[in-house]
Length: 211
Image (cartoon, rainbow, N blue to C red; front, top):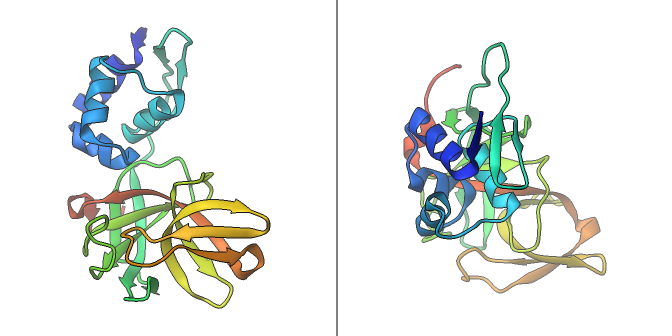
């Protein structure tokens, strides 16, 4: 059955007891923007629609050019929306992140990246954007763009969570999330990995259990 995409998302939110603020948090947009999109007062782009569908745990649908959606029904057990918390990230005053890799539970959120993981943040150096006790969702297989939050590991073992300004001429340019530190450049051959940070999640999503 066809539905307008925003009607479909509202129905999925109702089924999963999700609020606009939950969707806004998952896709890193304001609650006001999500509200305008869901009521039809404004129109999001295709990627924003896809992110909202993902945030409601929708795996596969057909999105038509007229904005309608056709659900695809599968026989079987639906995927669980749990992402493993692999450790705690203690924020240093110099902008670095000290990671203690211990399994402490799960975050209740759906992701299409099978290698996704979460880190629990400790420390106040990234406030007000990220508060101590909150979680960051990292998606190693998801693409990232200029302006995205990213998790970085340099070849000398230094971990950071920064904003990617750009990549060109064999270098990355990064900025601090809270503007406490000046932007800086790193040569690409100095960087071991750059992973997309898909969301900043509240403590309420933490599940201390084995799935």
